[in-house]
Amino acid sequence: MEVPCLLKSTEKSRQSRTRTHWRQPPPTDKPRRVIERQNYFDIGHYTEEMVRNSVAGYYGFVSYSDDCVGRVLRQLDAQGLRDNTLIVYASDHGENLYHHGLCEKHTFYDDAVRVPLILSCPGVLPVGQRTQFLASIMDILPTALAINDVPLPDSVEGVDLRPACNGQELHEHVFAEYYLSLDPSRMVRDQRWKYIYTEHDICELYDLANDPDETINLAWYPQYRERVEAMDRIVKDDWEMPKVPLWGTWNDLNMRKQRQRLAGVDIIDTRPRPDWLQEA
Image 1 (cartoon, rainbow, N blue to C red):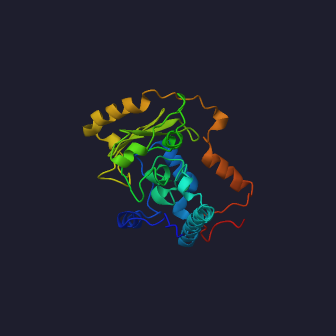
Image 2 (image 1 turned 90 degrees about the horizontal axis):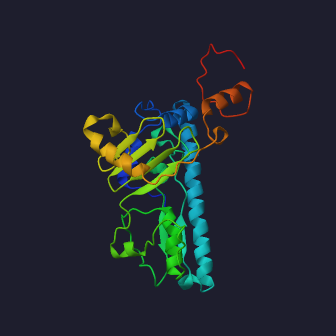
Image 3 (image 1 turned 60 degrees about the horizontal axis):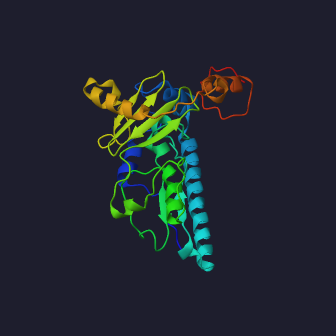
């Protein structure tokens, strides 16, 4: 059984990534947790060869993951278990992969927070159906319990996704939270708008219909004040913001990197090296 590679992107996304060169200057309308991370990666000094090699490596990991899923499915078929098995393919995060001047995750860009969610359960879920409804990975547990007729504990968040297969929209908004870098932050989005609140810093608003790459922070524009205020109320509603100890955050990314370099730690050095630079 062949498993399709999940890496195939749409023509629109390919054109978008072509437009967004990794050496573009970092934006100034973002909170410092984003700018700090852009400065940390400093990918404007990366060579094209470095970027191409790491992108190829990431594509290889994804293709390998797809192949591993195929091996599992083939074994289920060989043992006659496929028709009695719920299969869930998902991820806890995505990868910026040089988009927005960033690598890894650590942000609320769609590259980092939008992930695949594929469910298969013969006789219970329709085959080959795809929906555009909002969903959260917190919905996986309620869906699995419901399919197996297990009562949902009161402490479990999320909803059963099965009604979405019948055209029912289950979420008006979905949320994401992040606490590891600088100030606590939380994202809320609906089908069109994405709003990000960062404690002690600027907020962000993006029109995903007109700006899918999230390049223009509309929270700087007074004509969007009512939208900002409305989504700010939503994102803070019932948010139990934890108190993150200083040692649990990454407030010193650039300081840490500079100390490593001065100490001679063997890390990739992408800084410019003009002829007049003193030899190491």
